[in-house]
Length: 359
Image 1 (cartoon, rainbow, N blue to C red):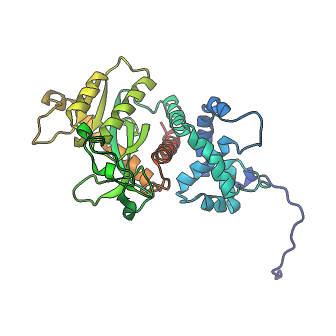
Image 2 (image 1 turned 90 degrees about the horizontal axis):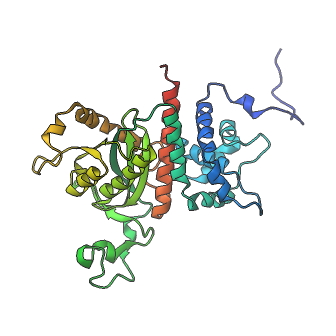
Image 3 (image 1 turned 30 degrees about the vertical axis):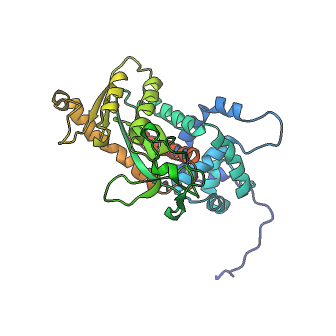
């Protein structure tokens, strides 16, 4: 018998959002690992909020929503709120019930400002790294370092002469010499600088993103963003490697660091020696070899150089699916926050997959 195509609206219907999410949905495993990392951040959350005043959005929900934005590559918070309106899997991941409405975009961004004011992205990355360490996924002795170019959210047309340039002899160059960055700047993003990584590429307003990965599974253990400059990669690498060494308590142990030819400079090699780190760096044929043939013949050097390329997978995911090829923020602090948070999201996704694999 044919049934007429009409229905009556139900006045009351009770259902748990938990029952709508399949047991094998990928977000379930990610949510479990995410909550474990957030538990490590509870002491920091306690210091971020007052005991009085208007109730704010829970920081755990804010971070889960931002994590969804990175995982799905949503370019705006407005798009994220629209997806959460009808996608029950996203609602469940964030922690919303069937009766709770997603936040207004303005409310969400205003609450997000509190996360940006604190060094929460670095704490998030460290919490995820500690989760990986608890699962025996981190190599504490062998690392790789590299940097990549992040296109700024500004047009080259905004790069114009500054209204108040420094006086002669007070520039940022050697002996106070005036550099181009002292005389020109972007009207849209004052922290962005014209830069290119090779002669075959055009100059673009950019930042530099830096990562340190361990060589067991290619997980990110340190992240940073800096102004685009010729020495930015080496300076950031030295700072990040100091944090990595103290994080694992290896202040007295000698570890290896793999890097490409751009790091084959005297100051960087000497800095690694002072940190009791063995540099595994590619060499230019026309320059003096600072590493030595004895080190290059070792098996650990060949292994380090082979696994150094794994760091490119991290950059590919962050700039591709995570959508950071061109940053959505302006200003070095915000760009660095977003880049580091995306690095933690990459780790979380990678850890979930690694721990699912059979032993």
